[in-house]
Figure 1 (cartoon, rainbow, N blue to C red):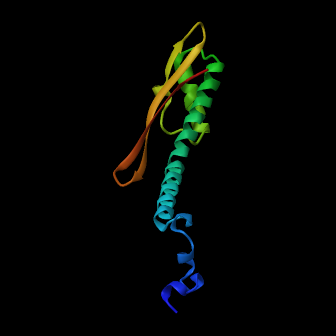
Figure 2: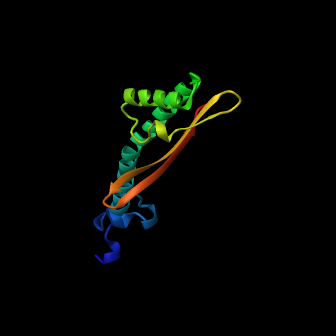
Length: 133
């Protein structure tokens, strides 16, 4: 028998299929996506607490503004009391609030920056700002 007469099942399964029809995930792409998804998850786990803190500050500021404090000092003291109750507020204090009046309504604004350590000297800087509604 010559080589051309050998049935295709003796040559192996890969030889029987055309090259274009073979599909699948390579080891390199599997590693790439695994590292990408892992790093994204790590960054989310590190940054979500800062987002929770922002929403807690926003709720506290809205609550204080709705109570319509008579003086700026009273508003700052109310925020400090709220800060003592809410364990997640650590980035700002009452003195960091910008308190104004707009059409006889108290408006409380705040802005702060939060550095999230990622690895060694690498940080993510997130700038938060908000105001009472």
